[in-house]
Image (tube, rainbow, N blue to C red):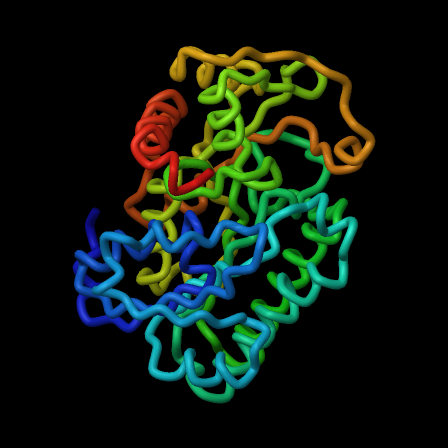
Length: 330
């Protein structure tokens, strides 16, 4: 990828660094010569897994730190060139059950990082991982950055509040930030213990165990799934592109796939399992957004990036990874 030579010698902090996206970034940054620090609180039931960095553990620095810890973050953000602030509470349904915890991590934790940047390192670039769920009910597809934001869960609300907070710090204090609203990511190094995050990975586990994949409704709903390596490439390029600083970007594959087609691709790839269609449960009806396809034109207009891994190949590569490393994930 053009431009990635700019990472040599850069000091990079990745919060949530033991999760799927954070560890994928680390695996890309180490060969590029970046000096990588990973911060992760290893809170259950989120995606932190030490195996995710097993092959690079001697080449990164790991700090078992919570982004809500003011004193620790004060020292971690100093002297960093770029910060990928990915730490999060990841379940929209859990945010309904415990909105205060969600606010503590997904808003106040991010505020803690940025306030420490303002005080101690205001020139560092910070990249924020928002969510497509910030849009709420989808009014038109493909969804571009101008689509109204109507969060329907505390998770989506706090992601939106954090995005606004980053914009405030950009406008008031000049802190460089790049703000992403991410579609449905999937791929190697994701947690595989529950269905609260990374639905493709969860369906893969069910198929690998020859279980039934339960699909809510008729399976005709469209979703945009982005392979984690494609997502990481977009984050890396945007972070080192000055024209991206201060901007909001939707990021996904740009392709809509029916839920039933995604499940069928998993079953045919794995060779086990089956799909069953069931009514929507009550706790999902309130967060169902309708069809979602991401318009990625704004991002592609400023960086030399396009998603390279289509859904079927991504599922095949993810399946191959868990065939080899299954015992590390469940």
